[in-house]
Amino acid sequence: MELTLHSTTGGQGSVNLADGVFGVDFNEPLIHQVVTAYLAGARAGTKAQKNRSAVSGGGRKPWRQKGTGRARAGTIRSPLWRGGGKTFAATPRDHSVKVNRKMYRGAIRSILSELVRQERLMVIDDLAVEQPRTRLLAEQLGKLGLEKALIVTDQVDENLYLAARNIPGIDVCEIGTVDPVSLVGADKVVFTEKAIKQLEGQLQ
Image 1 (cartoon, rainbow, N blue to C red):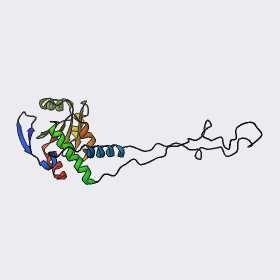
Image 2: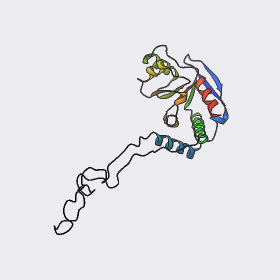
Image 3: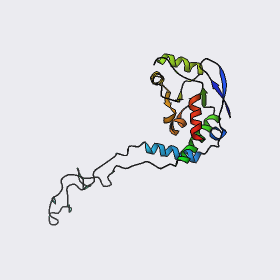
Image 4: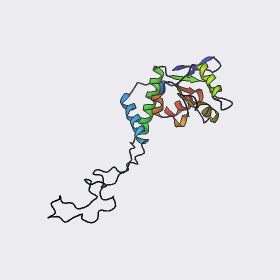
């Protein structure tokens, strides 16, 4: 597969990519499973409430069982009472779902292939700024015609990250931290040539 290689200087070239990574069929059930598993793994799962045994107090029976005319009660910490415990109290839990490595890589390949078909994937020769200035990066993005995009680089570039964080709709990440949710949700995904070659090697 051959894609256009864009440049911030205005020139164009081409880059050859493997059909087994960027030309596979769209597997919606697999992508859905991987995306939901990724989102589930990001949940904190720290929600906690107290049941009737965890609430302090209530050790003495409020009144005797019979003869008062009131309903029988064994503790003032009953869920029916104000200040009592929760009937079905939430407890901390782990929401993570296991996803096999083969499934994860297959989903990433399917997502990348669909981005190519929808013309939402762009490859550029390089994207760097000499200083962490938003104006410098905005000028380069303007030449490429990008307003909202996820920029993926082969390594951490602090100047690029600092310059992009003040531009709405522009996110920067390195190839090791790219995830399926970011790829699916981005209007356009921009890879540097080194980054896309590195990702191709990981997915083959």
